[in-house]
Amino acid sequence: MGGRKGFYECGLDAAVDVIGGKWKVLLLWALAQGPRRFGQLRRELPKISEKVLAQQLRELEADGIVHREVFAEVPPRVEYALTGLGASLNEALAPLGAWGRLHLAHLEATYPSRHPSRHPSGHPDEERAAGPEEVPAARPSRSRPGR
Image (cartoon, rainbow, N blue to C red; front, side, top):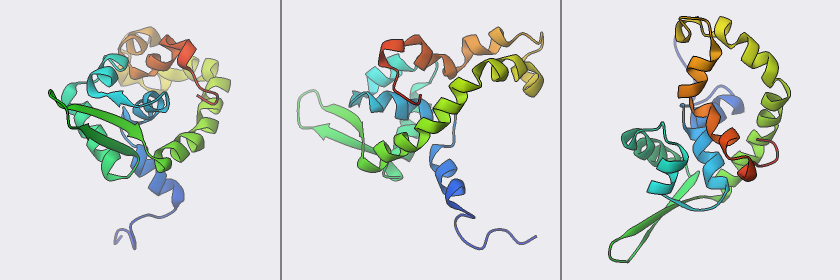
């Protein structure tokens, strides 16, 4: 029936537009630890392809969430860091991470029924082994409050 009257229906619509995608929240988590080079991000998120990583970083940069700095060195060095806007987005995501931790057992138990196409055998460990959701848990010393 007609489509949108403006860019976004509400603030949540705008926020989800910025963080939408499989990897953006994990990139925000990684960059919250400090500036990272492309290769560092690639190692911290081993399941992401270089093409998708570059695309997601470009989108976050275009949204003003990530700053890309090119250093005039040979060979050139490029670092990605959160902007003030990106840091505030991470702070806004902290309660969502806390909610996820609080309900983790329930969410893991119901995962196969909520995502049946991803689990032919109905066993959640098959997807978890391949999914990005394991990255923060694999680095407990770098976990942040609310994540």
